[in-house]
Structure formats: structure tokens, C-alpha cells
Image (cartoon, rainbow, N blue to C red; front, side):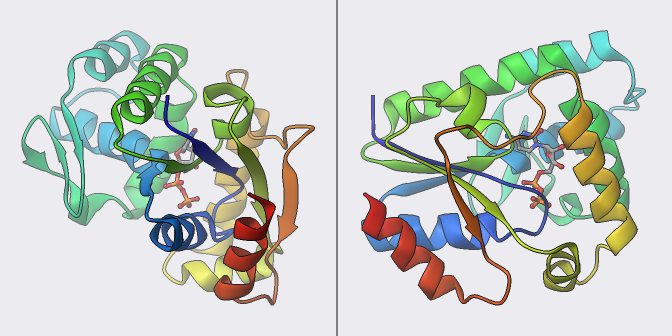
Length: 202
Ligand code: CDP
């Protein structure tokens, strides 16, 4: 099993930027698990599924071929341009609360790491608590709601607050800080500083 740095935190906390920068700095790969849930939500809509249909979504999560690179593909269909749509922001909270979807995504994330050529920086909502609780380093990133909304730009503050609430209160794998995760508040701090702090902890 490759080494893992696991990063969780709410929307706009800087996870993707920081995770990508840490991976680049270490020569590791980077896995954006949020893109997996978003891609499934888009694929379900494009197939005309009711997003609340737990059985249909569960089956899709098992069968879909997900390709995560510069472009994100589901069964060969390019969903990249829809990843950050308002509709996707809404749908993804419902898809991510589906227990069968989660167990299938978690399995894929573990498989990804098991076959990765070196270390992997993995970011999401349940990475430190459920997917890789034994990761070499576990981090909970956050920032003030105002700063998170500012960073997001096109997603408004109500939408971010709604997703945070949904992610933190759902029954299956809610977003929470693992007891032994390092807590980093990124409010007013540069990406370089955060990356340095993380790399120093290895
Ligand atoms: O970039 P941002 O933090 O706004 O969101 P994201 O990482 O793309 O994740 C989108 C949504 O997917 C989150 O609001 C969660 O509902 C869900 N998600 C999850 O449940 N578990 C993960 N490991 C990653 C994302």
C-alpha cells in the first residue's frame, strides 16, 4: 500500500489547492474524491435518473467507469465542464449521502492508492475518518465561511453553507475532524505556508 496524506475539510477550505501543491512538491499523485461524487451526480442526470433514487444511483456507482485526469469521464462521457455547476453543487449532496454510493467510491479510492506508483495525497470529507484512518499524515483544513465563499467566487455563500450542513449532518460518514488529525485554519494564510507546514510534519 502506498503512503497517504489524507486531507478533509469543508467546501472552499483550500483542500484541492493545497493537496495538489503538496503532491507536486513531494512528487506524489493527487486524488480529488469530490470529483468522483460530482461526476456520478452529473452522469445520473444525463441518464435521466431521479437523483434521489437510491437503488439506481447505487447501481450506477458500481458499474460506472470513472476516469479522473485533466478531464473527468464517466463511461467515456466527458463531464468536466459540469463539475462546478449550481445543479451539480445541489445534486452532489444527495448522491454523497447514499450509503451504497459511498461504499463503492471508498473501495475505488482504496484500489487507486493500492495501485499508485508512489505516495498519494487524497482529499475529501471522509478520508481521514473512514477511507484511510491509518494514513501517514491526517489533516483537517478549514477557513472562515467568508473566506471560503470568497475563494469560491461563483458558488454563493448560502450554497456553501448548505453543503457544509448536509455534509456534516448526514448519517453515513459525516464530515468531522478525526481526533488525531492536524487542524489547520487557512484563513488569511498563503498556500505556500500551508504546504510548508504539512511537509514539515512528514
Ligand atoms: O471542492 P469542494 O470542497 O467544494 O467540494 P468537493 O471536494 O468537490 O466535494 C463535493 C461534495 O462531494 C461535497 O460537498 C460532499 O458532499 C461530497 N464528498 C463526500 O461526501 N466525500 C468525499 N470524500 C468527497 C466529497
